[in-house]
Amino acid sequence: MRPDKTRRVDLINCRRNVEGMEGFATQLRRRGLRNTPQRRAVLIALAEAPHSTVAELSAVVAQAAHRAIGEAGAPAVAGVDGLSRQGLYNVLDDLTRAGLVRCIQPAGSPTRYEVRVGDNHHHLVCRRCGSAEDVSCAVGAAPCLQPAEHSLESEEHKGFVIDEAEVIWWGMCEQCSSLNDVVKADASQ
Image (cartoon, rainbow, N blue to C red; front, side):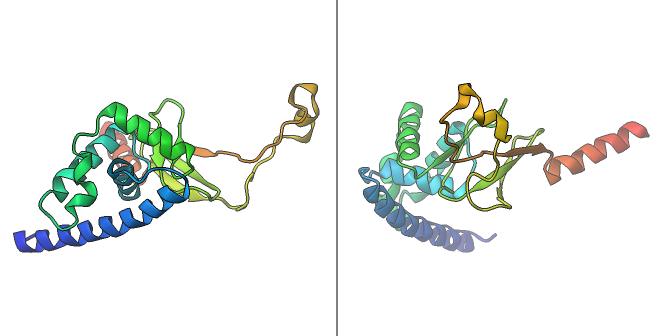
């Protein structure tokens, strides 16, 4: 891509980020949270890179801060350049408690975060690379799964009210499946 075209794409992305940040600023205020550059930057990073781990988010937020310096909209993300790892955890905790971010914890995999909240969706997780994808629920309304009737009638679970079921399907993404096929083909030769 030519440098002038790259600059135009960066400016378009920067404008989208600023527009998104304004929307996130409203959501933060509605949830009773202060509208800080760090919170807005994390929300934008999660919108751009859903299912990110803390390490991935840290890199995305840092790149966004460096990208915005000197571009239109720089003040919207300029304050996040020095966001520490602990600061990031604090922001994610605040956003999760406020219901603006959802935390998913696939077994044996790092915790991942996303901004798709308030709907009843599930996830596909690749066993090889750890990538995650959203899958809409076939039922729609939560909870979409119920335990066997007799299990909730026991004294141990009496009075327990289920409001959500979290489903994670495990397998291999298309890229890892293709790689696996190549490895199998090479091994059989």
